[in-house]
Image (tube, rainbow, N blue to C red; front, side, top):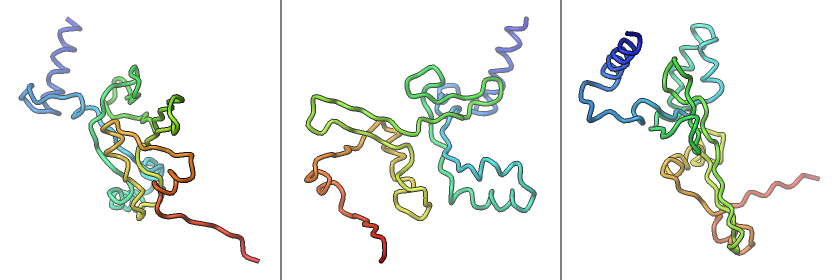
Length: 159
């Protein structure tokens, strides 16, 4: 009886969350990545005014939701808390491939982007490539570095 009641409750929950058309149910609609800043995560512990401000600014800082494959048992870990919801709390920040048979052996992708500044074009420019399982070459040879990167920031001490 407990199993039957649990099954019925889960069907009700899924129909409420995903709709009655079961052919449209997918794991990625239920289980998603949401790239959220630490300040946004702390908003629920703030006062009303600060919480309201963080909610207003959330689209500026945070990205998602995006469909998440897998769970805590798969290679591309996207763990969720059992018995609470299906939202991911563990997102792989970076994936790397190293093939030592190649002259340039290193490929990587960051889950969001290279910058921590929301006004930078590199704040979230890797999300879609990361979701698709793509990688970017990380060259070591000087000529390949110069071919891949067209902007260089040089910091020199004054004096």
